[in-house]
Image (tube, rainbow, N blue to C red; front, side, top):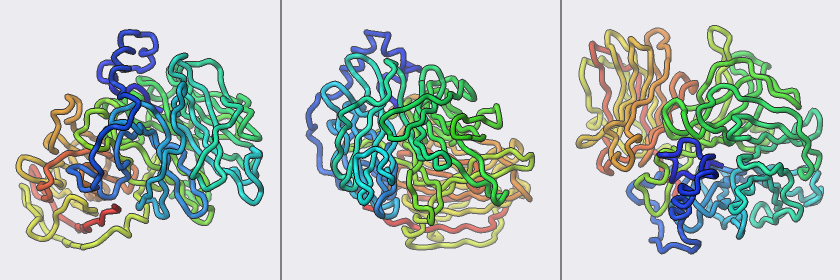
Length: 526
């Protein structure tokens, strides 16, 4: 659970809040009063309201929590303030969906109490009723989360259970189930380790830049097994870990384990972001195969990603979603009466490169294709040096999907521009000489709300046979780019005028060629 965002711009490591009384006073003043705020009813057509990304109807949201599949429903819990559009009163909001796209808002699942806020965590289905909270015929859902003690400034791990498909939750009377009197000990991700018939918990010791692994037979009593870290990027505190096994696409039958750890600061694009380690897990210890830092996303707005538990075996996918925001400016983005969205849900796998290194791959879920409406296609054509507006050919929109393949030719730079309007555009390009794919949001619209927002994001990428393929999702306030067939991802908020709907292709320093371009308008899920 990422905490204290309103101080983040001048407090790089949030743990120092606990030893800075003056800053704590500022924090408490920033948290809204514990009462429902007077807000207009949501219309889902507000200026920057995403049309196919999940948002709360009103109020503040951050990390996704407790992602679990049960009884033909995907559950999305999330860090939620029921009383305002800034961080505070952390509780678990709740929504369910049959398809990862169309969400039904439900009541707050786990509210804060007078002394404990419900920070981030995970959820599982206890199919064998190891906890004793359900029956063999009606297995319970168990939420495992961090209880944050406001007065004592401590964090410990709690559980709650539900036997009515997650509609109501009962906190365990023996809480906390894991407590060492630590200040920064949070974000438990729990999964069933079948080879040893036990539960495994991965939890962050944030300021130590470590994760601990615990085991349990009943979800109540936990035993320490091992630790991992510090490793990779340690500039910012560690949060929101996840551990899962994935297949390697180009090595049939071979798998690796992935440990995802988020950084509260110092990420590749600045501010918060996620890194991952590829390696082996034997049920007790995780060992990484590499020492370098590998980033989950190369733009600023993908954080606290967590994967769904209990996705049916016949489906076979590892699915996750991340918070589409950054702690540098999360409380300042110009949206109302809600604040923050979740990213597109993504399916995960691994892929080896020419050197044999194994990398994470993220692809938008297939369910997104059901939102496609009007289709436009452009085939092979030369791209003369300069910019070429495609609006007259029906290629435009503010809720669209684009699949574009470009041949760099003689150009030094080639790409496309989306959400174009008067003085506005978001550029998605490829720098041929530097061999870098990038997203430039310096002119993407409203940006004065925070000095670190306007930026350019880039990542190294080869262009095999001189070709670049980009899969782009544009929504009313976001652009998500999947390059190198999902090995490189950029997740970025943008805040352009509603009238900025143009799309163009361009080449600089020489001519290029459009191999193909497909565009679909996407239906609103609201």
